[in-house]
Image (cartoon, rainbow, N blue to C red):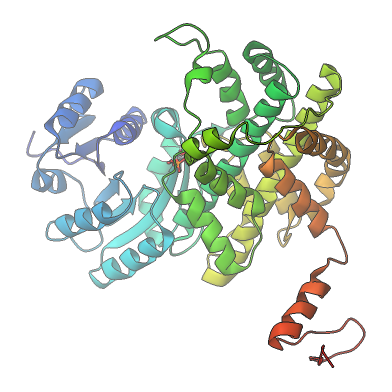
Length: 471
Ligand code: 6PG
């Protein structure tokens, strides 16, 4: 490496994501230096980058840090967890006051808060930035969700705005708020991602099993939907997936893929923290649970056939496809509503100062949950920044009225056919609960008071009451 050259941006972790991200930085005119312990990754980047003046790599951490212009901007794209801490420890003796370390992984937000406080003592800026869009997004334009020290973000802002995905000329990146706001928003993004994926899978299953449609037909259906209000990355790739042939065998690849969901944990964290905050996100919860249920493949196989599965009566194909489209839109909208409600509450509780219109805006391109719907969602929050739940938004009143009836038809068909649609059912129940003035929680309260003297409140007078139920 040329000793005098000072690169503008440094990246640690040259796996596919890291390599693609740094190449994207270099393509946008910022010189960048990568570091990885693995010499293979170092060589791969040098080769792919072509011009070492623009993008270079090294396997020596000293060389890496000394090769960066100050204040240094060092981004980590390494697996979340203890590796982040150990990279920070390795960097500490080498970096200088005022340098900036950015964690671009899916780190747990509480770890980000801890690391920020720890590094602040050492006068090193640290912030978490969610990066979404997978390997292709990293190369061509991800959605970036930075949070933390606003001033520190200013140092890296021109680079982030240049590399981010563009939505009609606007970069899909914005400073979101202090502390772990960036990682938190990314975590909820992933929770929503889980929900949308579960809903998509359910509709595919219903079309297949109740509607009798083949892969090619469902592929067409999703491709058509992607031209309308369901236009989104996940609907688009579903169509592509259904068209993929198996190159190891004959037939469609989708039919050979084992039905056991894996997960790295961000969906689970979203659910867990929603519970801590007291915010209902049932469609995200069930998406996490369905990955867990799916893992019990042997049990499921053993139980399959033990019980009768009724044959529900599907409507004609055209009606079924139309209802499914509306139901999927309904489910998508309610999943975004749940996630954004969680963000509103987290913003209050953790002091993130989030603007939900901005969050929705930076999700319009580059990220996994990008969808046409996000444009209207972002406008809804712009018009009403204090909107608690999208269910109350004027913008969505008529789409909800129009799609709830088909959603009921679809859920009813699933129930009648013994085809599980827990994501869609949960979205529908959430909607029905949120829009019901009186829920049967009066009985639950009475039961609590009956067996545990937990007291209750009344609808007709102030105060706290306890009844001697057995007298
Ligand atoms: C993204 C994704 C990504 C996530 C994968 C896998 O926004 O690019 O959310 O960050 O790691 O989707 O997540 P699971 O392994 O938990 O499904």
